[in-house]
Structures are given as C-alpha cells and as structure tokens.
Length: 148
Image (cartoon, rainbow, N blue to C red):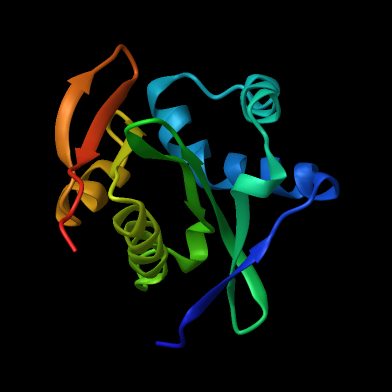
C-alpha cells in the first residue's frame, strides 16, 4: 500500500471537511437515530482550528482528515475520518501511527472518543487504546504515553 501524506488544512477547507465528516459518520449516526447534518456542521465548525487539522492524502487524492489537539497531559485525537470507500485498507492505521509518533515525541498519552456502536471502537482497541469512560453516545479511550 502506498504511504499516506498529511497536508495542512486552511480556513477555506471548512465546507469540504464538514462534508467528509458527514460522509464518514452518516451510517453510524443514522443507525442510532441521531443523524443531523446541521448539528454535525455546528459541532465541527465550533472547534475548527486549521493549524490542528490535516488532510489525509493517498497518491495526491484527499481521502480523509485528522485533527489533533495538544492538551496539558495528553494529545486529543479529536477527529479521524477516512472516506467510506477507502476504509479497511490500512490508511487509518498509517494516520494513527503518525499521531502516535507525535504523542510519543511529546511524551503524551493519546485520548479519543468514538460513537457507540461504530466500527471505530474496534479500530481503536486493535491499536492499543483502552476504554476509560462511557457517555450517553460515545466511548472514550486512552493510549498511555509511551517511553522512548
């Protein structure tokens, strides 16, 4: 599989990122009866920081995006979305390794939330995340800081 690259996002990318997020989450949200594209846009837009957002590119094609936010004691993996037609091919695992490399260089744990009943829960558990909390709609995971 070709390696992915990350390209910085800009303010002008907001609409495309929201569309990608909705595309990736739609099935899981519909299954729970919580699909609302306006709410999805508002939630993403309220926390959008272009400097923390990167497009995931495969051979020049934008296939997803990732958002990481440094916090005091951890790196928050706030968003990781891969287009549905590109999921299951190892792209997300490559992105996750880049996130781990970033966190490890900073000596930080990685935290992530996943919508309950989403396949992303299995993905994060396969990659070393441990369930630490459950909310009404989301599960929250932690990958402890790694020693270098």
